[in-house]
Image (cartoon, rainbow, N blue to C red; front, side):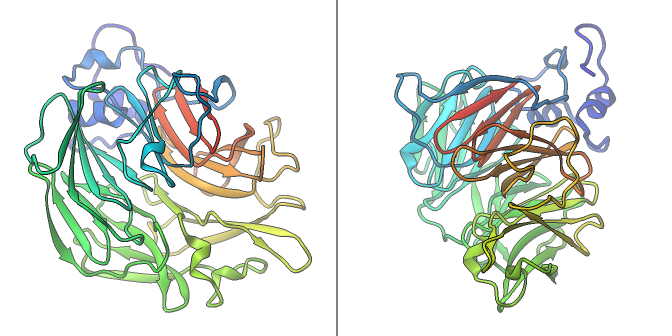
Length: 400
């Protein structure tokens, strides 16, 4: 339920509403969690609610603010400092932002290709095929090397690496530092944007591999160990790691050593911070007889072991769907493109060819429920309170 509109709000009330841990809470961390803009005050939370719904489509955006048709190939989305941002996997100029909670959108060149995001306080960190960049509103960052000011947003961007590998991961934040993997583990100091290699850990042979971190500092990525697709589970110092093979299923051969590394490009991983992790391979397999199979993988013991479940495009689904919801044309969901954990739920974007696709919810990460076919190959999702933004190749949908 929504927080009250006036009077005293306790940190514990906010934490309970948004599923935040009660340790090391601060107004800044709670506010940043839902994308609120500094300076922070407890009154920011009046009337806020963590309840998100995919039942009601508010509007569909197919043109930008100049009435030009959208031409995007979304790679990631984030809500930061009062703006929704979307990066592109094909063009630097193909990224977009919205300053009215997703009602209208403007194209821009803020982000490098394939940029992935993480927020740490009042700094947005992005890793891309072009650079590592830090974004901050309203004041010039400490590092002025390759800093660009975007006056229409009052936003500063500082780029610190001119090129990165296609095998670099998204950024993560732990204990006030940003990390990502690109052949080694790189730690970034957010006070001056300096980076240092801290460890050599197993890194993927795939393009745009996933990376996520739990509240205990456990980080998990995915790669190819020799020829075997595997999870890489590291401790919070990114030095010791365990390689766990992807579980096999009967009709999805890419879980075995016969896998082609390209089948796991752009895969995604997310955690609820309490021991449940989910992995979305993003690819389907077409059998010689023409049936198409997709895969969903999860762990309920903090990544120590994993369970794989296959689903079918053309026959009865293996997942647990909620009766009464709007499903895809045959009751199945197709490719799982993206997964994010927000406000006590996992949210997944899926695609099913031209004109089909949508969003799926899961409260526990082991069963997928509440499928909503929104006619969009959802590749990027961002959240602001009760608003969900879903972005596909030719349109952006807004739920609120």
